[in-house]
Structures are given as C-alpha cells and as structure tokens.
Amino acid sequence: PQTDRVIQISGHMLRQSVMGSDMSYNDMMEDRPLMDLYEATLESSVEINGRDHWAVLLTAKVKGLSYPMRRAWIDKEYLLPMKEELYAKSGKLLKTSTMDGIKKVQGRWFPTRFIFKDELRRNSKGTEWIIDDIQFDVDIPDSRFSKALLRK
Image 1 (cartoon, rainbow, N blue to C red):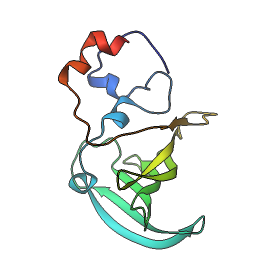
Image 2 (image 1 turned 180 degrees about the vertical axis):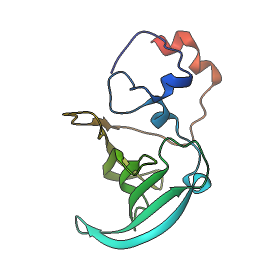
Image 3 (image 1 turned 90 degrees about the vertical axis):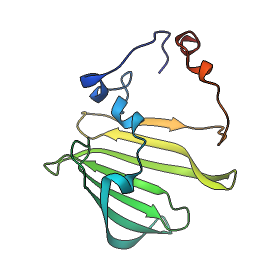
Image 4 (image 1 turned 135 degrees about the vertical axis):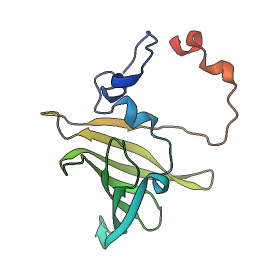
C-alpha cells in the first residue's frame, strides 16, 4: 500500500489492519525475542517439501500478548520459521504466515517472500511481501525518520 499521509498510531489502533492488509500494526512492531515471551515445546520432526523441519509449540509465559499460542515449523538447516500459526487464548486460529525464496545474504539465510493471512477475514488471499534487496547492519541516521521524510 502507498499513502502520502503520516498516521500516528497508538492504543486500540495497534490491532487494526495496516492500510487494508492482513497485518496489524502490532504484527509489524513485534521485536522482542520469542524466547523471552514464550515457552517452547518440540512437538515433532517433519518433512515439508523435501526439507526437514521441527514442529514447535510456543505458549505464552507473559501476559498481554496478541497471540498467547503459536505453532511454528522451523527449517533445520535455515533455522527459519517457514510456517507459523498464531492462536487466540481460546485456541482459535487467527493468522498464518509462510515464507520462502530463501537466499543467503551477508552470511545469513533470509526469506525473500512472506505471505501473512488473517484467518478471520472472509475471502482473504493474504498479504504478500517480496523483498528484492536487503542489507543488514547499516547505520541509519535518526534524521531519516522525520515526519517530512516519511511522507516521501
């Protein structure tokens, strides 16, 4: 989505869709390590598309998380969650995400395609992100995040 407006978000707005996508602002802002938030249980070892994965159940160990339970399928070589299911406290499936197009970038495996799907939205095909180019550990000046530059 493209917009030329700067929108300040807070409180209840964090749960809303980002410009009509299947992602909420909360989904995009998640930055704490999962190991700080969840207890992990290895459920099984499975093969998906000819690749070995661990199936892992994550249950919240802190209160107030958007998704108190998650299930992830971690590629054993890439160590990336190739598929994830996000659940409500009730156990209802809320969202799914998948990633593919794995490439090695600056010595680390990185997915070039993400699909995020809100399972509660009828007829949703999901929101797809494609990353053509990425660089890690780049110094970005604080001035880059001014409201004026965000409008560009």
